[in-house]
Image (cartoon, rainbow, N blue to C red; front, side):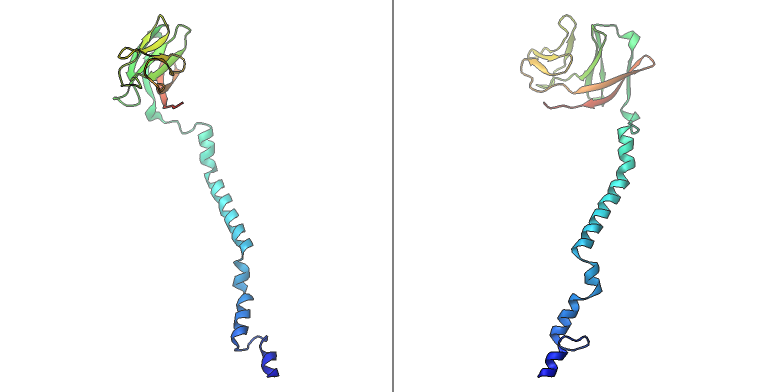
Length: 176
């Protein structure tokens, strides 16, 4: 009996308990431990972060400007202060309004009222946007409703002037 107890912890023994102890001492088990798993996960995260870095840089510097969304509206010289012009943006089914304010600023919004989609007009005397269907008023500077039944602001259209031409370049649908 003494000899079997001594053989039990020796390598090369056929005893079942020795085989279980040998499983713990395997080289593969040491390579695939928790620390190695965490290192591999951290390494993969860093690699993915570095892989997306060029896209982040392009987005930060605006290199992804979408020329498809750029729409020529009107030459600025043809739109005197205190006047407005209608156009469609971003699709032919989205009516919009560009206003050249008395202060000389350009403001553009989709011109379908957010209440029941009636057309919105520029009121020069009061410098507001008006929906005549239910007397809805919108602030010219922000597009937020100021009176009447509309509860949501008008979608804002970003504009830019290049070589004297006014372009619509983007639309912001805001909620709040």
